[in-house]
Length: 315
Image 1 (cartoon, rainbow, N blue to C red):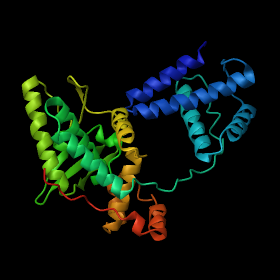
Image 2 (image 1 turned 60 degrees about the vertical axis):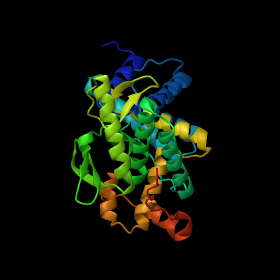
Image 3 (image 1 turned 90 degrees about the vertical axis):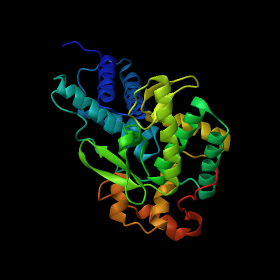
Image 4 (image 1 turned 120 degrees about the horizontal axis):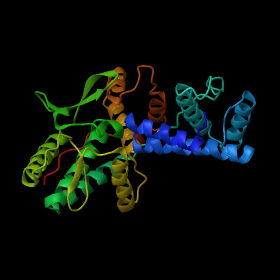
């Protein structure tokens, strides 16, 4: 059977999108496969591939080791190609996966680099100021951005989890609100939101529902994608959340990302003496996940890692 490598890679990437992989995840897989394509061109001067021998596997391993200093970069590219060959195997284009036996170094975890607490405070103050100084759809977008901030610093959510939230994901208990996180292969769990979330959430819910009524919209998702003129769709992709952080970095002149703000939340929970098993559940990680790097950072510099819940401000 004749087949084209680039066409099959496009099919593979489309499959990842269909499976619900985030924009950034698919983009990274594409970059990893392009690395393999570059290797083929360097070695074979073309992209035709009908077999991939153990010798070529070894050559690719050496190529990656020479090209990248980071063992994590090598590991990711091997894993991407391994999954792609599993895809080809499923289409009966290869008798076996030639990368199954390719050894890679174990994943190396980077030291946490949280957003400093003064920057966390400054970010929230900026977002609140934007809400107070805007109206209409602009105010709604600014209030949505405060929800993004709370869901990461308040609840430690990953951007991939935030994209799937609905209004019924926000639960009210006797004291405050909780956010319910649901995964297809895991039991749902809920995370308590800090007290400061309540007022911001109720304001957001009120103006969001009123806007939908005025515009005859029916959106169940908690977040939304919109431009300065209208709401485009319910839900906000990881890429949409990253664009929000890109704007914050430009205005505040910081290195803040969704990841660094989430790490700030982890330090906040450690300072609150939250049980580690509970923390791992809230973070959506396995029980075997280690918090040792965070604990080591606290031991080295306990005063520099003092994070806490924000206090409500008078509007």
